[in-house]
Image 1 (cartoon, rainbow, N blue to C red):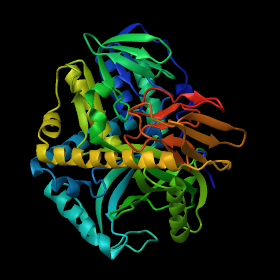
Image 2 (image 1 turned 180 degrees about the vertical axis):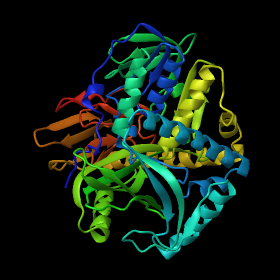
Image 3 (image 1 turned 90 degrees about the horizontal axis):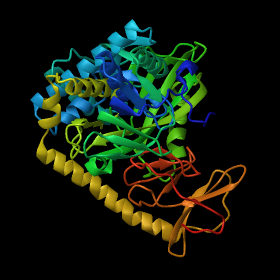
Image 4 (image 1 turned 180 degrees about the horizontal axis):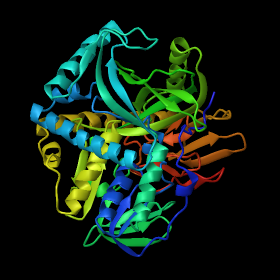
Length: 499
C-alpha cells in the first residue's frame, strides 16, 4: 500500500531548479502546469521576454497529479453542458478542445514526449447508468464527434452499454512538462521555482510581489494557478473545488483503453508505464468536494476495493490525488480577468479535462496577448447562459454558506482527547480556533482558520493536510500553502499559544 502522494511520473531532474528572477519582463506567468508553461512557450516563440514563477516546483499542481487523458469524449460532459447551454456554445466548446488536443499532440510528437493513442469510452457500470451513457452518445453525435455505441468493452467489468471515440490520446505529464520547460528555455524564457506570489499591483503594468519580498514587473500577467489567487476578481466564488484520487498498479496486460464510468462515484481507467518501463494500470475517481467529506482515506480504499475485485492480479505501486475546479455553469473560464483591465489574464474551471481545455485556454490567452484572437474563444467565454451562470454560482455559494455554519459547530464541539499519530482536529481555546495534528515525531499547532476568507479548516486524514471547505485552499500540517486561492500560510502556534 502506498500513501506518499507521489504519481508514477515525475518531472525529470534536469527540469528542477530555478533560473534567476528578472526585475522585469514582457509576460509574467504564475503557475508551471500545462496552462502556464504552454502559454509561456507560445509567447516566448513570438519573441517576448517571458518569466514563469511557480510557488513550489514544476508539476506540483494538478498537471503533475493528473491521470492525463487527452480526449474530446469526456465522461458525460457534453450531455451535461447541453442541459445548460445552446448547441452553438457546446459546439464551440468542442472546437476549443479540438484545438487544444491538436496542439498538444503535435507538440508531444515533435518533442519526443511519451504519448499513446487510445480509444476513449464512457461506460455504464450498472443498468442505472445506461441512460447517462446513451445521452452522451447522442450529445457527442449532435456536435459532430464520430462516436460509436457498444454493448460491451474489453474490460473485466460488466458493462451495460458504452460510447466510444477512437484515436484519442494519453500522455505522461512529467515528460510533457519537461519538454515544455526545455522549449521555453530554448526561447530565452525563465522558470523560477519556490517563488510564491503574495500580491499584485493592479494599477498600471502589473507588479507581482513574492512571499520572500522580491518583485517582478511585467507588461502582462497570466494567472494559471488552478484557482485564481487574485481575490479582487472574485473568480474563486464561481468555482467548486474537487479532490479526486488515482492508484497505480503494476499489471502485466492492462486494458488498452481510456474508460470512465457514467455514474457517481465515477471510475476512471487507463494504462501507463512505471518509471522503469513496466506496464501499469491507473484506477481513479471517487472524488468529493475539498474538505467536504468525513474521511478522505475511505475514497482511496474504495478504489483499492474496486480494483481488487476486478483486477485481482494488480499490485499497487503508487497512489496520489489531484485538485480540479468546476464552474457554476460547467464551462471553463479564461481570458481577461474581471477588474484586471487589459493586462491580467487567467484560466480555470477545466472540470478535470485540463489537457485539452487548459491547452486551448493557453492558446486563447497567448493569441489575445499577441493581438490575434482564436475564433472560438468569445463563443465559449461570452455566450454562456447568464441564467445558468447565476444559478450555478448561487448553488456553489449556498454550499459555502452551509460549510460556514457547520465549521463553527465543528470548532465548538472539538474534542480535547490525546491525538493518535496521523490524526488532526480543530477546537476552540477561548475565542480562538486552533488546528492541531500529530505526526510520528511531534504535535503541530496552527491557526484553524483559512487565511483566504477565514473558513474553519478540516483535517484530511489521507493526505495529512488542513483543507478549507469554502473555496478549496489546502495547507500542510505546518501551515504551508498547498492549494489556493489562499496565498498566506497559517500562523504557527506554540503549545500554549492561541490563534
